[in-house]
Amino acid sequence: MIELRPLTAADAEAHCAGEDKHTVRWLTGGYGDVKGTIEFFNWLAGNAAAGAGKRGFGIWKSEGGAGAVPTVPARLCGYIDYTPDLDDGLDPDDVALAYAVHPWARGQGIAPEAVRLICDVLRTDKTGTRAAIRVEPENSASIRVAQKAGFRYVRDFPSNRDTHPDGTPTTFSLYLLDL
Ligand SMILES: CC(C)(COP(=O)(O)OP(=O)(O)OC[C@H]1O[C@@H](n2cnc3c(N)ncnc32)[C@H](O)[C@@H]1OP(=O)(O)O)[C@@H](O)C(=O)NCCC(=O)NCCS
Image (cartoon, rainbow, N blue to C red):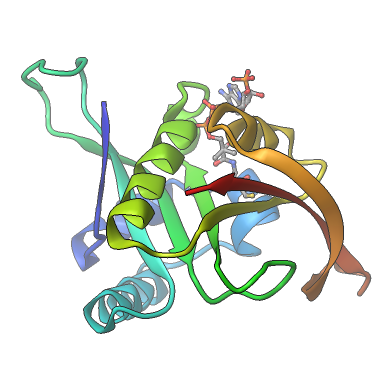
C-alpha cells in the first residue's frame, strides 16, 4: 500500500539516498545533496501554500494490503510531482507528471499507483483537463508506467527546453490521460 504526502526537511536524506544512475539519467540530470534538497522541499511547500507552480510529494510504502494494520513505519520509496504550467510540448490545460522510485522498490507497480493517486488529486482540485507524461523513447520502464496507468501515446516531439550533452534537442514521447 502506498500514499502520497508532502516532503519535509526530515525526508531529505532518504530522498537523496534513493537516487541512482537511472534517476539521474532520466529525471534529475545530477545527484542531489541534502542541503539543496531541503531548499527544493521548502520551495515545493511555498508553491503548495501559494497554490501555484510545481507540486511535489513523497511516495510512502507500508507493508500489508488495504485494511491491514502496518507493523512497521511507512518508508519513503519515491517522488512524484505535477506541473500545471509547463508548455514544452503541452497544451495549456495539460498537467505534466514526473516521478522516480527508489531502486529497492522498483518493479512492484509503485509508480503506476502513484500516478493514479496524483491524477485523483488533480481531479479533486480541478487542476487541468489532461495529465501528461513526457518520456524519452529509450526509457522503457517509464513508458510501461504510462501504459499501465492508462495513458495513451500521442506523438514524439523535440523539446524546446531540454538537450542532450551534444546540444541536440531531447526527443520526448507524449502520453496523455483525460482527467
Ligand atoms: C520508471 C520508474 C519510476 C518505474 O517505477 P516502478 O515503480 O518500478 O514501476 P513498475 O513497477 O510499474 O515497473 C515498470 C517497468 O520497470 C521495469 N522493471 C521491473 N522491475 C524492475 C527493477 N527491479 N528495476 C528496474 N526496472 C524494473 C519493467 O520494465 C517494468 O515493466 P513491467 O511491469 O511491464 O515488467 C523507475 O524505474 C525509476 O525510478 N526510474 C528512474 C527515473 C525515471 O525514469 N523517471 C521517469 C522519467 S519520465
